[in-house]
Every structure is written in structure tokens, then in C-alpha cells.
Length: 471
Image (cartoon, rainbow, N blue to C red; front, side, top):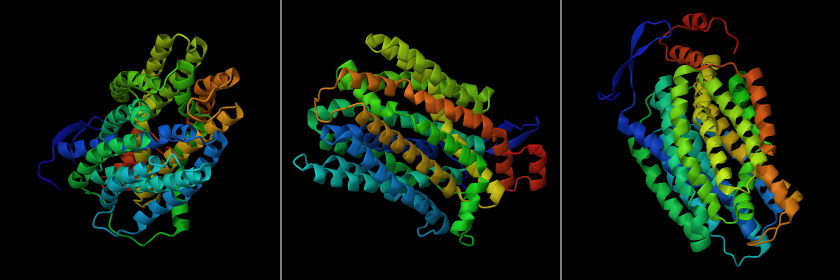
């Protein structure tokens, strides 16, 4: 362990004071967060604009929905298998870091491939190109996302320091989101292909440093290779992980605003540029939300901060629906306020998965972080894709016409507005109910389990500290 680690003091739950070593140097923490600028650019480039790219390429909404569905069947296969593979086999010197280095190159390359599709292709050739390209990109993102999140649990075994890493991830991730927001201003002027190249170069530059700076300090020694049955038992026993994942999936079933948002800007507000304007205006309140969340996390458990964020999304979603979009300044203001109070969920979301990974280790005795974070990766990609697929399916049902500059009926535009405002609230409300009923793991519980997993306290001491709580 490096000699220049910072040392701090921290009060324990009982009021006693113990010395807690900050395992990670500041430069290493910085590169971990810096990585997510590039990752979020690549993720945003594909997840936010792939459906728009397809519709402007003349592909029908129903067909786009099918493409996304097929791609996610592939995702359902490659994501868990890759996580199991990296937990069972260590073919490189570093268990997770080596895969991060490989994916740093693969993600930009596959992103470029998706968006350089020749416009001269026929409809069938375009569909084949996009299906293959999307599947290759999805595989590259799997190779990236599972290891980079699992890496955080290897860099430090301190829960609060680990939570700090995920806050940095969120902060730097917003920078990536801000950069990718300029895509709607770039592609109408220079084309989709050159836009993808520019974004990929920026991403590569920000993702590279962590591969040279990060260190794996707490990877477990190789054990007997677990079978698929054993891995299944691990997931079944990790109830908090299953509840969190299920809540995300439930919310995604009606999360049609991601699909509708681009078309609200183009057809209701009047220009592709409004995609960028709306997103840029959301950045200041998003950053303020991080500060607000950090303050709230000092006062309340992350679970209740997350629930409050979801409730605020419902409240402001209803307000936006009734105030409408005709008064554009008012609409943009209400969206900014919604972001301020509703972004805490993005800040705290990754922290839950880390706690669930700690619980999984405590409950099963196996330190298979890759499984826990593969579920997160799979859930994130699956929910994004299923919401987009359902969104495109609904666009088809309301009569949306593909092609650049295609005219839409008043009924179609009214349907787009419902997809952007009211429909997403149904899934959010259902996910809140599921979490309130089923998720009982709290931050202090995870900290106790982390100490037991690190052999800082005995199992008996951990059980006493947990007070017989059923999680």
C-alpha cells in the first residue's frame, strides 16, 4: 500500500474515535472520476441519439423498436457471462484494470462504426449495419462498465471513501453529459459521422489516465471456480440487489421521456437546437443537486434521499404537464427546477450497488463484485433499451413519420407530449412502492458488513451491531 495515503479521523457509530486510512491518493481519485467524462460521452452518444439517428435515416419506428429489442437479447447474454468470466478467470495481471484499458479503445471505435453508416445504403442494409454496430458497441460497453465499477471496490475497502468515488463519478459524468449535449448542434451542420469522431477523440483522452494511475489493492485471492448454480444462488441470496434492479426495470417500462424528449424539441419547440438548450440549462441545477445531495447525505440515509428525489420527479412532472410547452421560457424553467430536486437519484444510485456488493460478500462469503456490478450494468443498459424500445413502439402507434423534416399530425404531437410528461410517472410511482416494501439495506448496515468482510470485526460482532435486522 502506498506510503503517501492520507490519514483522517472519523467518529464511529457508537461515538468512539478510530483511525481511518484514506486508501486512495488524490490523483488516483481524480482519474477514476475523470474516466466517466469519456464513458458518459460514449453512452450518451448512443443511448440518447441512436433512435434519432435511425429515424432521420428513414427507418420506421416499429423497426427501430425491433432492432433495440434484438440488441438487448444479445446484451442479456454477453453482460452476465462476461461478469462471471472475470470473476472466475484472471487472464491478465489485473483482474479489472486490464479490461478497463482494453475497453478504452474499443468503445470509441465501435461508436464511430455505428454512426458512419453510408446514407446511400438501402433500408435493409441500414438495418443490418445498425444491428451489428449496436451489438458490437454493446459488447464494448460491457467490457468497460462491469470492470470500472468493480474496480472501485478494489481501490478501497472503506465504504465512505468508496461513496466519495461514486460522487466523483457523478460530478465528472455530468461534464461528459454536458459535452455530448452539443451533438444536436453539430450533426445537422457536419454530419453524424464526423460528430461521432470528435466525441470519440474527447472520450479516449479522458478515459486513458485511469488505466495508468489506478491500483487494485483489495482483490481476493483466486478461489475454486464457482459454477453457474453457485452464481445463481449468490444472486438469489442478494435480495437488496434484486430489489434495486427490479425497481429500475419497473421504472423503465414507462420511461418514455428519453425517447420523446428529442422530438419535443424538434416538433413542439421548433428546432434540434432546443435539445442542446434544454440540456445545457439543466446542467447548473444538476451540479447544485450534487451539493444538495451531499448535504442531505450527512443528515439522512441515502435510501430516503433517493425516495425523496423520485417523489419530486412525480410532483414536478405533473406540474410541467399542466403548464405546457407553449411558453418556452416557463417550460425550460420548470424543467430546470425538476432537475434540481430530482437528480439526487442519479448521485445515489451507484452507491446502492456498492452496498449490495458488500451485502453479497457478507451473505455468501464470496467476494464476487463482478456479479453485483454486472447486474448494475445489465440493468442500466436493459432499462435504457427497453424504455427506448417501448418509446419507439408508442411513437409508431401514435403515427410518427420517420425521415428528416417529416410532417406530424396534431394527434401524434399530443402523444409525444404525454410520452414526455405523464407516462413516465407511472413507472416511477411503482418503483417507489417496490423499494419501500422490499429494500431494507441502509448505509450503516453496509459499513458494518464491510468491516466484517475485511475481518476488522468478527461475524458475531457484526450480527450484534446489525441488531438482528432482516435485510
